[in-house]
Image 1: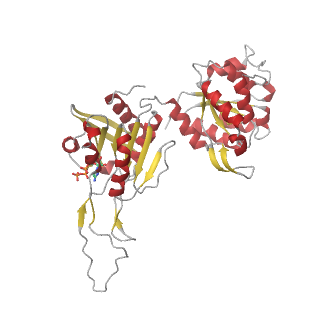
Image 2: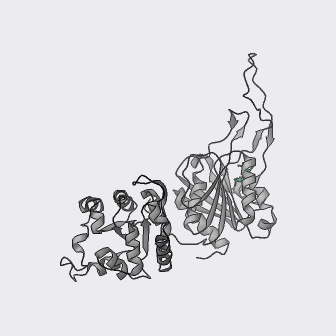
Image 3: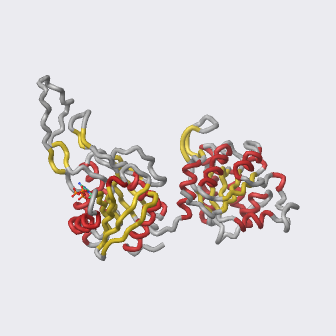
Length: 410
Ligand code: CTP
């Protein structure tokens, strides 16, 4: 992916042990297509050398020797002006408690805080990835500073929780580079579903025969997880009801893990009344064993295989689509169809059978387990193809279609 192609960042490092993570973050930004200009405070240089950051960013670093903000190497001698105007965003990672306090007061006694103050505030966003000890993080002064910084058009990317370099455990760690990258990518996505609540089912279901065995299917959940990420990037509040899959939860998404279709139905029905959009991507098992043995079903020595009777599972999408909220148009329902052949005809028939405004068709063998896919969007007016692309790119296109059809605007 090249989600940051053409974007230029000033990556600012302030004093903190999390500086070691900034090296990986710098690489991650560049891998995603961005260019990066590193600026370090004197305190940051005690944790990681400018040479490391220069090698990773491919550009000479501005450091403590540029403290005055005036630099003979620049034609106009003013890096604080030049750097802040070139950037599409300034990202401070790690951002120490001290540096936050400095930003809050608009101090400008070294290059990094100076260029933050000099940035064109309406055009160049400032993003902070705080990193500090848990007591420092929880301190009213830090919390107060953050609230004020947010009110002053600064985006605070949050912190992680866990074991800290100081030996204590709690909130305040800098987010990991992949998490920061996801947040930065999300920051630049259009907020097409700002404030909307989106509910998504994803993955397979597992229908138990006994405590050891059951039936399931090959759904990887990747499409549903990509839609959850795209909806979150678009500013929605996202709940993801996931069958058994081995996928990381997208940043900022509430995930509810379930196994069976009935559990998935129950979790979905709990959230549907609060939702504006429902996207059913789950490959729900159509049938489940009629009885679940409490103990493992054993071979009885006769060579006779047990007979398994099946009973039909509830149709989650159909149940939600028939609810008053969906029927009134307050809940926009989107279904998926995985077919092996005659996609357009099956998808059209399925949309009508489910009574939903939008159905997304795909070919099972061309999507299961893969990172890319191609989709056919079917609504009352006809069908439109979304050509083969990564599932995340397709998910973003689908979110844009949903936003347009629900009248949500950025
Ligand atoms: N779905 C659901 N609950 C079920 C079955 C399906 O919510 N018990 C949803 C899926 O998440 C998907 C859509 O319905 O959005 C798929 O429709 P369905 O008719 O079940 O598809 P298939 O199982 O492929 O049906 P068929 O066997 O008729 O092709």
